[in-house]
Amino acid sequence: MNQFQYSRPADASVAIKTLSKDQNAYFLAGGTNLIDMMKMGLVSPQKLVDINNLPLKTVSEIPGGLRIGALVSNTNLAEHPLIKQKYPLLSLAINAGASPQLRNMATLGGNMMQRTRCPYFFDLTMPCNKRVPGSGCSALGGYNRMHAIFGASDKCIAVNPSDMNVAMVALDATVHISGAKGSRTMKFADFHRLPGDHPELDNNLKKGELITAVDLPEPRFSKNVHYVKIRDRASYAFALVSAAVALEIENDTIKEARLAMGGVAHKPWRLTAVEMFLKGKPANEAVFKQAAQLVSNGAKAYEYNKFKLKMAPNAVLQGLKVASGLASA
Ligand SMILES: Cc1cc2nc3c(=O)[nH]c(=O)nc-3n(C[C@H](O)[C@H](O)[C@H](O)COP(=O)(O)OP(=O)(O)OC[C@H]3O[C@@H](n4cnc5c(N)ncnc54)[C@H](O)[C@@H]3O)c2cc1C
Image (cartoon, rainbow, N blue to C red; front, side, top):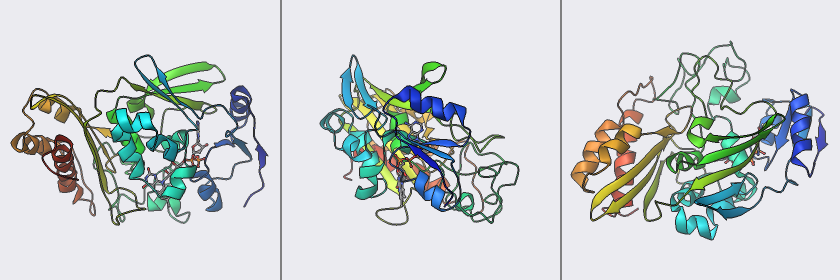
C-alpha cells in the first residue's frame, strides 16, 4: 500500500479545507469502500481525512421531516425507531444491503458515495472509462450481466450499487453539502449522475465538498411500502434489480405512488411515468400489471443482461402487490 498522511479533525471546515487544497485527499468515513479500493490499487490517496470526529451522527426531527447526519451508520439508521415507524421503506432497503458487520461500519455519506461494482472497474488490467477516462468501456462488449438498461452511454454502462440510495430517491430526500465556498442543498434524485461523456464522475459533488446531512420530507408512506431485491444469493450480494415501492392508499384508491429502481442505471432510477399512471387508480392486481408493463419503456439491454427487461417489471409488480397487501413478502 502507498504511504499516506492521516488526520482526524473535529471541525468540518478543517476537513473541507484539506480536501479543497489537495487533489489526492479523500474523506474517510466507515472505510468499507475506500479502504478496499486502496488495497486493490484503484485509488492511492496521499491524504486521508478521517471525518469520524465530526458531529454528524444524529437523527433528529425537524419541522416537516427528519434530518440524518452523514456519519449515522447504516445500522443505526435502519434500526432507528423514527425511521422504522415513519420511513420503513428506508429501513427495508438498507437492511437488504451488505452484511450486519458492514452496515455497522458503513455511513450514510459513504453509502451515497460508494463506487460501482462493475468488474471491469475493479480489474486494473482492463480498460475502463470510469477508472481511466478515455481508455474505453470493457463492459460494452464484455460480460455485462450486472449492467444498466436505462440511461447508459457508449462510454459506460455501469450501475450504482446502493440499496439505500434507491429508497432515498423514492422518498424525495434532500442532501446538505458544505464546501469551501459555503453550503448548498440538492435533491437526492439530482445527486447521482448518468454517465454521458464523463463516467468518471458518479455524482454532482464537487472536489472538497462534504455531505453533512440528508433530510427526509414529512412522512407520507409509513404503511404501504416494500423493497424488492433480486440477487444471485439471498444475502451479501449486490442487486441485479431492485425496486422501492411506496403507496398512499385511501379507500382502495392510490392517492400517491413513489417508485424507484436499483441495479438498472448509473443512478437510482425513478419511475415517474409509472407513478403518474398509478395515481388515482384502484389498488388492484389488474392495475399493477398494467403499471408493470410501463416499467421497461425506454430500456436498452446488452448481450448478457436482456433478462433485466423482464426482471425489472416483475420486481415492480411484486413490490406493488406486497406494498398494497395483495401478496406477502
Ligand atoms: C462485501 C460487500 C458487500 C456489499 N454489499 C452491499 C449491498 O448489497 N448494498 C449496498 O448498498 N452496499 C453494499 N456494500 C457497500 C457498502 O454499503 C459501502 O461500502 C458503504 O456504504 C460505504 O460507506 P463507508 O462509510 O464505509 O464509506 P467509505 O469507504 O469511508 O467512503 C466511501 C467514499 O465516500 C466518501 N465519503 C464518505 N463520507 C463522505 C461525506 N460525508 N461526504 C463526502 N464524501 C464522503 C469517501 O471519501 C469515499 O470516497 C457492500 C460492501 C462490501 C465490501
